[in-house]
Image 1 (tube, rainbow over the protein chains, first blue to last red):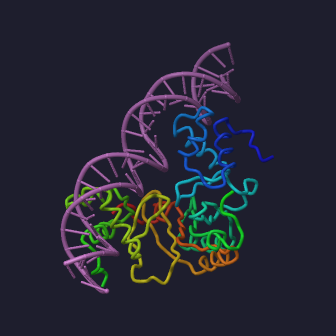
Image 2 (cartoon, protein in one colour):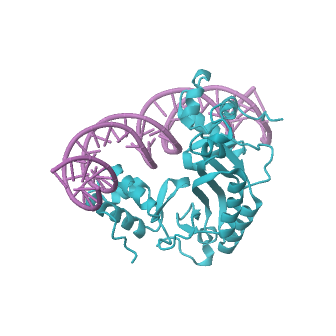
Image 3 (tube, each protein chain N blue to C red):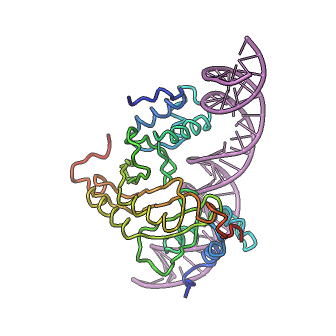
Length: 140
Length: 140
DNA sequence: ATGGCATACGTTATAGCATTACGCAATCGA
DNA sequence: TCGATTGCGTAATGCTATAACGTATGCCAT
């Protein structure tokens, strides 16, 4: 059920690479990871990423120009997703919040804005990196 | 009162360019605008932008890799600023919302995250571009 | 089956955004 | 006057993303 049978070979390879990564990957990093699978050019990666984003399986993190596999690929209930990105370990926490959606919705209505894509990203230190003494490991 | 006496010549030139623009400018666009003022290299622009961002006078729009002058340079009450960016006319609406800050604050507290920078950007169509018949002009 | 359309692919080249590294100059306080 | 800090100028480089070309494949209405 987690696999998307409609995916092409390239798309599946890119999604797999992102799924195995613990942190967001740049398009060029993905390209390097997939050289052994025959990838030769950035466009192969970008085209796959475009499709995967359309399908809601991948998100682009604008503030770091990198991509992550969606943490909740089965649930498309939330249009607006927020990310907390640790600048030290690189890990990303994906979440959504109805309250934020509601507040943005109010503004949108009041200003007759028609949003197509919404980006919410916080970067900073995750709990483990802010306070290493609490036992959470950064590596692995 | 709007001028910052501490600004260097380069910083003042960059801020002025952004202030006169109706839409966000890329660093390289700013560079081109300031060639007559002696600017020769991207770094001159980036250095000035860095300082202006530190001072809260300029914001970077991550989703379009461009920069805008702060719409409320006198008011630093809001740490979290949101932007609505029209993909057609390029105009940007800058706003803040205490409700959103409160919701994000809750998440941060619950997850012991220590945010350093928060990005909230909506792109889509502004009222004028979504419904040109309502009389608002796009050009000029 | 055949023509037309849509989608994906592969390759090369190029465009656009940002930083590294070096050295010099001005300022300011100890 | 020394040293530290900050800003400046230049050249080179690196990273991110797209344009433009042609090809292959699957689908399906005729």
